[in-house]
Amino acid sequence: MPKLLIIFIFLFLSACSVDETTQTIIGTTMGTSYSIKINNNHVLKPIIDKRLDEIEQVFSTWNETSELSQLNKAPINQWVEVSDSLFFVLSQAKKIHQQTQGFFDAGMGRLIDIWGFGAVRVGAEPSRQKMAQALAISSIEYLRLSHSRVKKLKDIHINLSAIAKGYGVDVVANMLIKQGFKDFMVEIGGEVMAQSQWRIGIEKPNHDVPIAVELQNQAIATSGDYRNYLKWQGKKYQHILNPNTGLPANTDLSSVSVIHNSAMMADAYATAMMAMGSQKAKILAQQLNLSVVLILNQQHDFKVLKIR
Image (cartoon, rainbow, N blue to C red; front, side, top):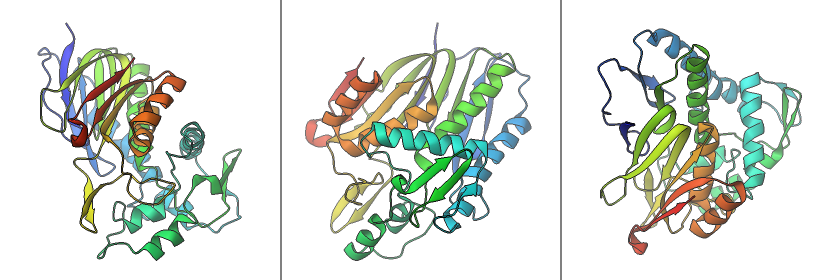
């Protein structure tokens, strides 16, 4: 009988029905919460926290001493040695940027900050002039990678928030697998990896009955528009930006959930699909052979589209 877990996108996690041998480990990381449920009582929380702290020290945009923050401060046209983990995630980010025709772009840090969705607090609505200036230097296309080194061609700021949580899930899950554990669930900020069989519930924007999804040694990541948003010029905008315009994406989607063998990849693909809308998302899912759950917005009565 698969265990039942209801995932509310972004941060909220409910209890699951498991037996009395299940251990639950909870904590905070990367500006959000994490939860591990495992049918074993020998997993040590300090070991998990230490590894997550190491990951945060690499990818945090809030910590000015993190490796990513230091890279963002580095001069242009200068090769910088980076850690294996940062090089790997940047490499995957560039790959996904190409696969998604630019709709996943980790080079939009300056635009994210201008809109107030990043580490920089803003006191006023962004001006068109500031957006245009930031857009001109906001793409991972201006980043070169070679043998554990990276070079910025323009003064871009990299933001890996839409892929780093998934990477953290993968790292912790792989740690547990290497230690011989075979039945567990790792969740960071709503991104999930399930080892063995679990049933996941995807929250609907209208608070209807959650959509049940069966996972077998798979990950799921969800991106949506109804928890993190802002109001600008009289309209409500989601936190995901359209890399082509620098504006918050304005599509027919309310949420996207992607199932994949890697939480990192699912995390990034879900973000890209939210930015591109349902028609392009369906095409991308078919091209990449992805299992996807799309929930259309209120104008489309929150219709659910399942692909594979």
